[in-house]
Length: 326
Picture 1 (cartoon, helix red, strand yellow):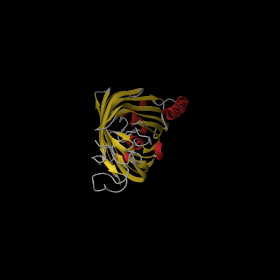
Picture 2 (picture 1 turned 30 degrees about the horizontal axis):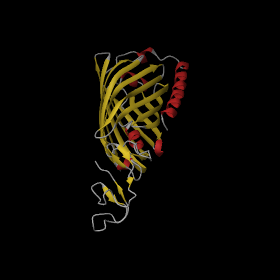
Picture 3 (picture 1 turned 120 degrees about the vertical axis):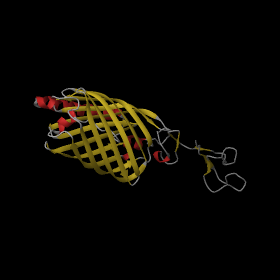
Picture 4 (picture 1 turned 180 degrees about the vertical axis):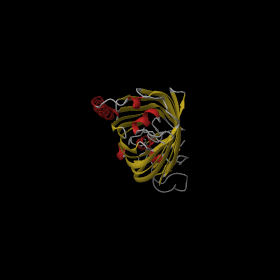
């Protein structure tokens, strides 16, 4: 699916959340008061789950993930946050770091900028940078990060991540979102429940679906520290902005080989369909030679016989295919 499908669905979901927000009673004033970051605070999270058709690999992949964030106030109006994340599965390991600098009025909005670096198996190195925005309307949060992503030695493209979150109670968060990265779109649904204001532990579950049979189901636990006695909603508005690390990574990796006629973005051949090769970040279909021999009849570097070895005279004994290499 493309943005023409996800965006209307997202607007309908946002309209439903806004309706719920305006129908709800106004939040207590002490929920809305405070500085951009009320006090130095952090979050550690652990999760495990299973993914299908991700990072160019078909089939099911089980994984485990650790995340962490630490926020500090810069005066009252501004805040700074650092993120880290580590994900491991049978297919490899990924690591990433990010930073946020932001201005926030906890009663209304957050405005800032965020940059991240992610690296790992099947994806190479990816840099992202762009503005970050959050809107607070009664018991609804609208959270978004968008900008430009660049893959080391590969393509660059715009990205976007949007979440609309409803708090039926201040300790229960229900969210729906959309991710776009390197020509791929993914829908996300998530629920998080904090045990108690004075017990800063929450449990969460998340599901994702996207193009090419991509899907993820995961669950985990978050532990909050450094700013006690707060509800889950208060933590989001006076504590940490969203940790977006690896939130868009699977979207990129899965979609990179979705084109059967070439032109999809890629990191290596695994991101392309059978027969295609990753050339300068683009899935490129092979060019058949109908004369029966490759080029001048000699299989040069980057050319390969379709059947059998060469005939002993430096040429293919059967038809061959040119496989261009960088």
